Length: 185
Picture (tube, rainbow, N blue to C red):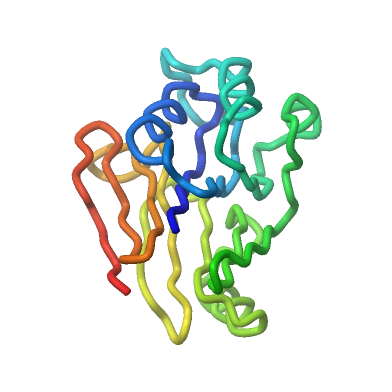
């Protein structure tokens, strides 16, 4: 089993391309935690801002993609994609693991996330929105924020994505491939 996990691409085509080429090309599934195409008024546009190119890459992706709607994902953006943007949550059962995905803007506080995770017996709770990595276990649930593949708000500015496989979860720096955080099963 291998699942690629990405969030907050904000229309930056090469953020997706880098994550896919380096880490997701052989995955069984890709989960996107929202803010797929639009850069958002508070975010800088970088040279690789190309939402049309990102749409093309997602639409032709050979790996199935599940997307939870982010606060910057509009209906117009969603209409360009050939797969649905699920809102506000996506619930994935993969090889016995119960995974909930939400962008994170609707449930920001850890207490609310813990309550929701407990209610649905989630093994893994994935969110995005804050553009900063989280990888921790609270109670019976592993909470993961892969950070942003395009517009990091980490102090060091690293663009990141995560991989879930049989061994655990790793968050990678997309430029250096360094494992920044790891949770082993």
